[in-house]
Length: 390
Image (cartoon, rainbow, N blue to C red; front, top):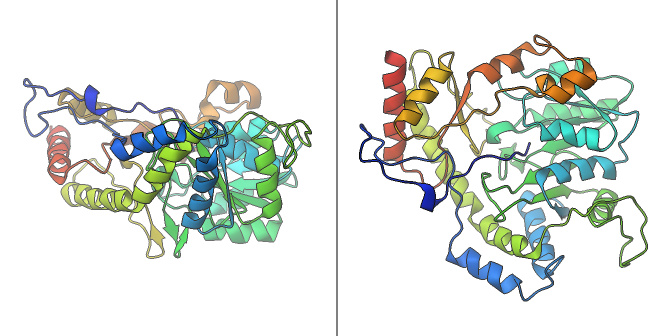
């Protein structure tokens, strides 16, 4: 799951003398960190090859080690990572890929980019992620792959999907675009399926200072194919001999240099997100008209890319927060199957995936980034209680 989200920068966060209550300055939804060390790394990278320089290969090696996989292949975006991973597995025309309708549209678009058909299954009855039981019912003889999404940084029931994929002889691709560092049974997201796909867009838990993506895998053939496809289809160690139909989907060297620094900070940032999530839960526990994110199971460790609450009074709550200089987001107001191209191409209509549609009408993302303070969280929660008590 990757997206183009609005991101505030320090220069755009203005104080507001006219605001009242705890939110006296504008609190952005997300705030990426680009500091002096990262800027210096970016400048130093300008002395390397600007495309596929040394920093790219070092970043790939370091990211693979971080995730616990043998290989990592960088790409120009998370969307490209998903599409290239599918193509590297030989998935294309005539194939079906099962995924969730409650994600950013890129998850399903990547399937279409390969020539395959996305087929949906609804989310869990009491959650936000793809349901294994409903996925099993959606499988057909044409199914070649399953793409669960670790949405908002909450791990999906990936072990159940792994068992299903092995039983049905289909491929498993983790959409970990929002789940850098999340764990299931001690294993990192992106290391459990045949491939994992990440986005480094600035709103994510770590960035490369712009668009970027990564494919993680233990499959050497998949990694080799992905390296070729992201680089115009080139054969290994050749400039003009092409073995595949590829794309120009490489990660720039400067971006990779920034990513290397960000990766070193990721665990600390994730701990900050978890601490802030705990404060949100403490402040909002028991508030009428508000549902909090599901508590993670003992074998899960989420990384809270977003802290997403649910309310039937979402628009009222959203307006109240924004009137008090607190930015919020809705991820996502339209489920994929009801987006115009999917309605036109596949004939989907309202009511097809009711739980995903209900989520789209109720979810609200609250500010979440490592530099957010607990006092700011307390102030945001005070505004939420104020809104829902009226």
